[in-house]
Image 1: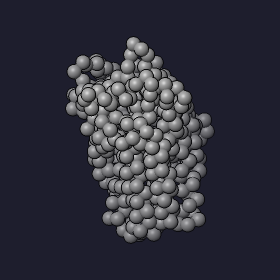
Image 2: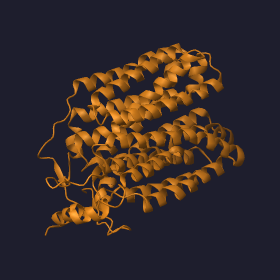
Image 3: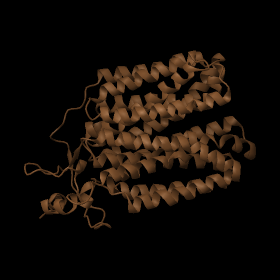
Image 4: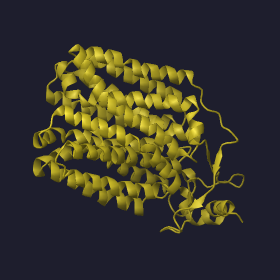
Length: 451
């Protein structure tokens, strides 16, 4: 018997399904919880988590705000270049090993940031936290969920993103207290140790690559007598890159990432120009977070029933409305409305992206495909703060820059309308299952993604 046939017979044997799937609860919902926790632990690498350190860094390292911003830009761009490699590693080794490795590296980088003495060390640290935290850890967490669900993939990814976003949004409050109590160096060290203590055990003792690793099935539904578990199928990265669907989704991701990061980075000054106090401007993150949570859950449920196109178009329309609405914000309800629009657009897109790529291109090479898309997303986020800042410097206010930048989601929406969804191809790659767990703690042989 060939290795492929043997792996399929082990993963889909009726006796094994009866012994494991029949008595044990479906492990996929645990994977959702583990992945959501992993997403929350990306907070030290997210803009909201880093922004709390900016003023202490400027004061203690005797560097300018422009130098810090440039270091952050360089760190984000260089870190984004590693995402295709991370995606291929997910396909090659499986999510479990990649999460463990990323957690170890991410923690080490955070600890090392406690010892920086100048702009060069700070830039290297930004490269690391943006690559490992904002990029790699969030990529592998959501990709893991996609492997465990099919019919309920949107709902599962929506829950994962919603819980992860809540953790990221609350992190700056904790980080601020750490800095106030112990200083920024000790705060970074504590963050690194926390990542080690949470992410590495999570990978080793919680994450499983795929349902077959423990004798279960996608969505927790055993195959009937007429059906069997399907082998891994899907387009390769090269095939996906030749479709308009890949680039239309990537365009939406880039527009959202660039504008959301730019608006959030300058939120105090931008809303201050509209008459809000610094406290009121900072409080605007609260409606953004609430709207993002609700929109992520709603999009996760909708994407299981609808084509991705309407949700993508809704996200771009709401994002354009938020950017234009920022020009008319005043203290009070209009400011809250702006926060709700910006958060809702971000939440919708986060859920629909994670579910759309596996729907369009399968899961055989999902890591490589999403890794490339993630590179575009992270790189675009690097230019958002600079674009908003340059617009302000050229005109003396933010209004004109926002008017111009609103064209980006409009252009992305046009691309979505003009792009056809890829049709299934019988020639798509079928990945041969291979062992990666060597039996694993729970005895499952476990196929890994195609190398």
